[in-house]
Each structure stands twice: as C-alpha cells, then as structure tokens.
Length: 292
Image (cartoon, rainbow, N blue to C red; front, side, top):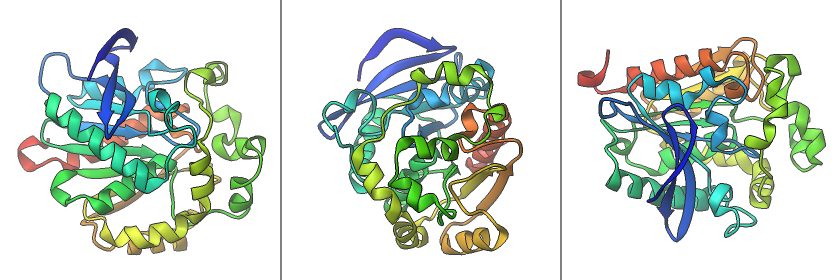
C-alpha cells in the first residue's frame, strides 16, 4: 500500500489498496491521537467515487472527517471499476466480482493497519448492494454491521425503465429537488461524479431477485435509511415490512427516514445529520467494552 502526499481534507489522505491483481484507490481518515475504535468502510453508489463521503460542498458534513473526530478510521473506497482500477476494468465488475476484489483489498488493509475492534460497512445506493453481498458471504465475526442509504429491494414505478435509459433521464432520480443540496454541489460535481461501468448498468434490473437470494444470509445488524424524497425505491410501509422480514437472520434491522433529503444523502443539506445517526448506530454495534 502506498500513501500519496496529496491531502484532500482534514485528516483525509489518498491511499491505494492491493486487491486480487487490481489496485483500488481510496481515502483514509484516522483519529489523530489514538488508535481507531473501529474501522468504517464506505462504499459509494453508481456514478460516484470515494469523494462522495468527503463533504462535497460542505466540508463540515464529511463522513471521513466526522468519523475520525469521533474515534473511527474511515476508509472510503473507489469500488472496482472506479478510480485507479477503472483503466484495468473498463466495463467494471458485477456484484460477485466486486465482492471478491474488495475482500482482497480489505484483507490487505487489515494486514497493514490497526482496525480497532472490527469493520463496519457504510454504503450508498449500488454500494449498498455490494455491502449486502459481502455480508451474505462473510462470517458474522468479520463484520460489526451495515448502514445503508439509498438502497431498497423493490424499485419504484418507472425505475426499471430508467435503468436502461439515457443518463439524462436518470438525473432527477439520482438527485431529487435541487434545493435539497448546497448550490456549490453541482459546480463541484466533477470532483466526485464518474461514468457508470457497463456491467453495473446491466446488473441493476436483477437486484430484486438477487436481494431475495442473499438477504436471508445476512447475519449482522443492518440499518437502512430512505431519504424523504427518495425516487428510485419503494419505501411505503408494506414494502419496508417485507424488506425487514426478508433479512430474517439479521439480529437487528432498523429502517430510518431522513427528512429534507434526496437520494444522494451524503451530499445534501442534511448530510451531517445522517452521518451522525449512522455513526450512532455503529456505536450501538460495537462490543460492550467499546460502546458508550
């Protein structure tokens, strides 16, 4: 693993991860004067990058910086097909391939860094699909839990058509009302928006069936957050009851709603509120000797 000299924010630095023959780029933040209590691995959604978790137009909302201030290491990874791995994976990878590469990257990271009491996955949108896939395949001892935003199990009406349509048609679903985001977000979007690899586009319509297969194998606590103005996913009461029931092996399933937010929660005005809630859930998942 190598560390670049470029600083991208308070206590945030760029690193690379060796991963099953691929090199993944990532952002890493750590507490300044103490070893981390645990490590939060953050997985971005389709068409984004690790910078999604570093504050966008409002640095005080950065998950990377906030997590470090609260005693956690935060590793925000450019998923396979993004960042440094994009050239070698021009079409990206499906969920199974991404899970294989990311497992290798995390094994390498654990070998070189103190991770605290364990690893927790915090993921958005397509990253949530990857987090659930990893959790379904991993022994419960490998993960403390999952916190996922912008990912459900049943697409909202019209979503399936939009998945195979032009990118312009998906834009409103990805963001929602512009007023939900600081104005500078869209001027700074080149810092975090990326092309979606073709394999992710092709795999997206199959997610409801994939979820039904893997959900009963997830055996760690799960929290799912739906933005008030989420457009991609159904999140009515009956659908959420069905979602909880399918995560039948998880010891705890929490479903929250984030008021005044659109799909890209971590870039909106309420990003800090969401991140604080997510980190509070991580606190609840720590072993007793590390809890509050």
